[in-house]
Image 1 (cartoon, rainbow over the protein chains, first blue to last red):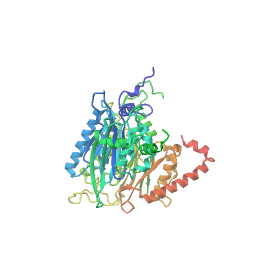
Image 2: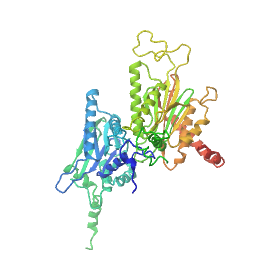
Image 3: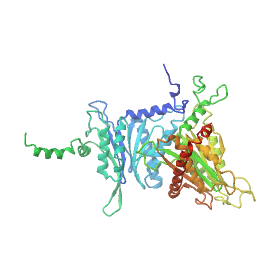
Image 4: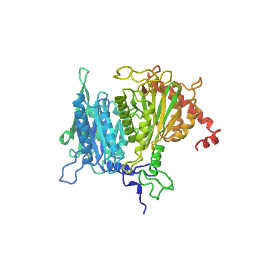
Length: 265
Length: 297
């Protein structure tokens, strides 16, 4: 049987110049449930599908606050994500202590990028088996970054990672132009609609399996801007948003109208 | 590939019976699959340019920079595995800062190339690490001016790292390219990544080595750099790309001795020139097809 000799560790190049261990780690991200992130001029949102191991168990958290102004969504090995999350929290806190202000999002993301790169170049280490979407605000406004196990980090307008995330990405690509000018509510709805695209048949968004997080800068009435800290919403708090994107949400008013005209029955 | 199945290519730092380190050669393969980067050294400065292939529509335009500033007068661009490149840049920044701390003067381009060449080479020596999957182009403009050393007491040395020899020409633009093996050379024009063959052929046509009238100026070099990236991208036409360019001039030039992004207006102008020239090339291609094939060697 064919055996790949070049995939045992992350310090061996294949003859084509690939590192299979890193590519396999990227597969672990695809095992995780889907998360979607979108950034507009004023907000960045993260939405996620949570999974439960069995009927009676609780749902695994997918969205984590890092600091007042940053949060992450995870897909892949949760325990690896926790390591990165702790590291990010420490860095943000350290930055706040020394400089007295929020850490720029790019700086933070670059730090986990370098941290993850080292795991791909040294024997005895393994790449992180988790992908992240990092949403945050800084002096330059809202940002959304994608982090991969390879250590690759890229700023995106919108993105989705995890199982069947291609469907969500297709939705995002189709609506790409609209995002920049979206308000907070509109952005969440786009996120949830993208999330629904990636749902397995017969599954739907419920208040138990859906998480939403928002961070942004809100325009005040006097024209000044005020930062809106990263906040995660679960359970009953997301029910209104789920209802607003339900399949019959748009159809409902039309149906009501139809009822009135349905004189024959 | 004769190396496969011999076992000599399964770990880094292992010599094969004919004296090759296959893992380093495979790392070069990673570079050859990466997007194209080039560097041009002309008489009054340096231009670095990178082809950024757009892998997804969802990427934020212009946000993901590939050319890094290492010190105020130094820039690095790389092809191959991007995370490796970032690590390399981090290390280069550490070296540049360390040099300033120690010697109270900015590191010269040559010294940085030497330090980074040594760093890359160290990753070919041990089974516990793998070589870097990048080739990096280091560009810098070492000051020709008599720069007072930070915190200098007295006149300082008259020769050596902190001093200047009277009557001798000091400083100027320099360009180096470091490979995964740690090997580095100085260049007038350097190219790496997928489109390196085409880019090299174009670079060789430019007059970069003389200081005479016909030699390229910095602004011309910016335009040529844009054109060369466009030419190098030609084989990969189905994918869209973004062009990123930086430059470094002397203290009396447009960047005042600093490494910075080429201003948008000039970049747009260069891109127009590149589009015009590559469109013209397509017409001529039919006639010169035979000689074009030989260039591939």
